[in-house]
Length: 117
Image (cartoon, rainbow, N blue to C red; front, side, top):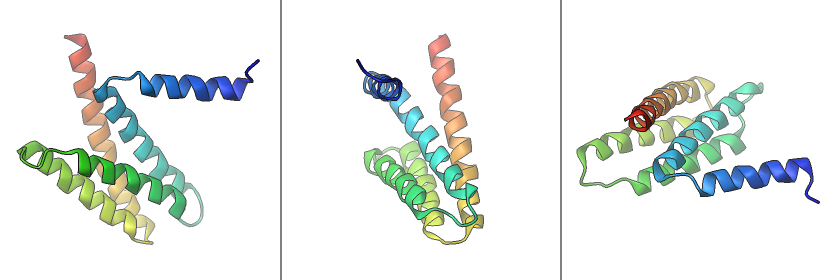
């Protein structure tokens, strides 16, 4: 018999692996924001969480169509946030967090609108 935490992990993995491409992107935006928030909870920023957030941002950057104007704009946003997370100054992490929250929320609104139509 599988224990409670193991079932939760399995459900989470299954939910992510069966998500639509757009839903997967949304989940990654949420995770990136969460990682930065976790980093900012302690007295000093946690490089472990920031590195994970930067990994997500790098994957976003690599997956964008460089010939698309909107994708180029997202590339610049992700690159800005990635660079802000390089700093040891939490102020710069908060700047990146604010931008990523706006991107995440906008993406979620688009997804919601598409589901309603």
